[in-house]
Length: 157
Image (cartoon, rainbow, N blue to C red; front, side, top):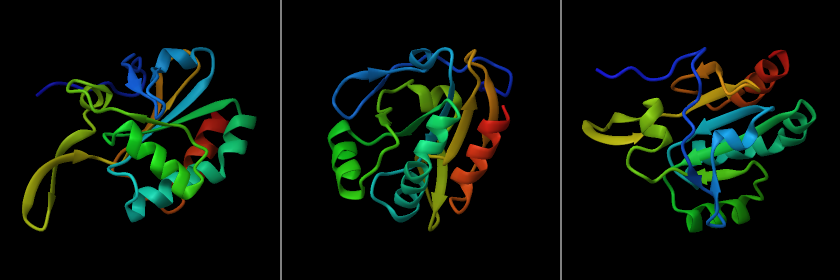
């Protein structure tokens, strides 16, 4: 079994695609704290709530010097629709490439629902310090209150 980056390790500097077709990677945020939240799918109930919660707190993250980045395997075009439909302000990125960020962190994993096994995004959040090190990880996130918990941890970092 491969070992994935843990607290204290550097976040892999893997490029993802922005909704406008550009690119973004963790080193783009060098010198500031970064929260990367991975979620399964645009426009599903839990994912919509999580993105709205992070968007609602974006000004507070900004004030604390913390960048946000929401990541799923959805296409850039799907992200654009999702952002427009819900007025999201937390930036999103697509991690559709094989061997991408979610693979490197182990959050693209085998899941089970209704007795079926499939590959999917495990809802997880990474708090990265200003040097690019993983400061805290939330695995198998429950959405309610999560954005607030992450903000508190980011402010304390």
